[in-house]
Image 1: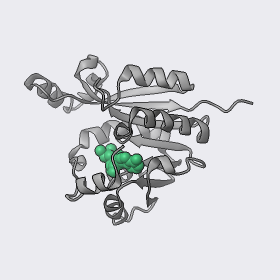
Image 2: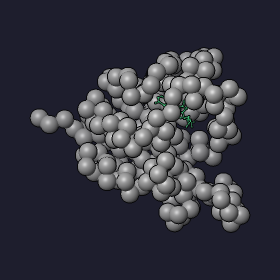
Image 3: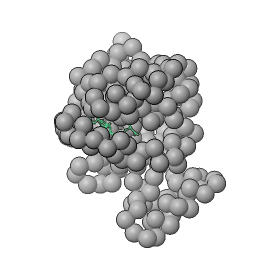
Image 4: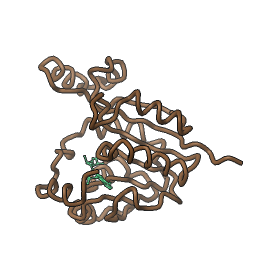
Length: 214
Ligand SMILES: C[S@@+](CC[C@H](N)C(=O)[O-])C[C@H]1O[C@@H](n2cnc3c(N)ncnc32)[C@H](O)[C@@H]1O
C-alpha cells in the first residue's frame, strides 16, 4: 500500500492525474451508474479532490467521501457540495456499515493483492447484499488488477456481477490513440464494450455483495 505521505506528495500539485480532463470517463460512469446512485447513501472511497463526487455522484441522497490524503480532502471540502461530506482516512480502517452503495473508483489498485482481498472480504462482511462499484486498470501486470484474477476473487467470495463496462482505451501506440479518439465521438462510446480485451485500460464492475447466511 502507498502511504498518506506518498499521496500527499502526488497532491502537491492539484489534479495530479488530470482527472478533471477525463470528461469522457465521467460521461460513461454517469450513463452506467445513475440508476445505482440516484437517491442513495453512497460511500465513495478514494474520492481524492471530490471530482467524481461532483461529476458523477451528485444525484445521490448523500455521499461520504473518504481519502487517505488530507491535502485532497481539504480541496474536496472546499467544493462545498450540498450532498457530500469528506473524511480523511485509510479506506481499510473505516466502517462500511450503513450505506446503500460503496464506490471504489480507481483506488483499490494501490493496495497490495493481499489488501485487495481483505478489502473485498470487508465489503462482503459489512455491506452484505448491497452494491459495490469497483473500477481500475485491468491490464494484466502485477501492480494493477487482472480481469481474470478479479473475476476469480469475486466468485470465490460470492459477489454477483450485475454489469461491467469498459471505461477507457490504452494509449501506448498511435493506432490505439486513434481508437481512443474515435470512441469520444458522439455514440462512439457504444464501441467501447466491443473492443478486444487487450485494448482496454480501465473497466468498471457493478457487483452485489453476497447476502448474509440465514
Ligand atoms: C487515481 S486517484 C482516483 C480519484 C477518484 N476516485 C477518481 O477516480 O477520479 C486515487 C485516489 O485513491 C486514494 N487512495 C489510495 N489508497 C487509499 C487508501 N488506502 N485509503 C483511502 N484513499 C486511498 C488516493 O489518495 C487518491 O486520491
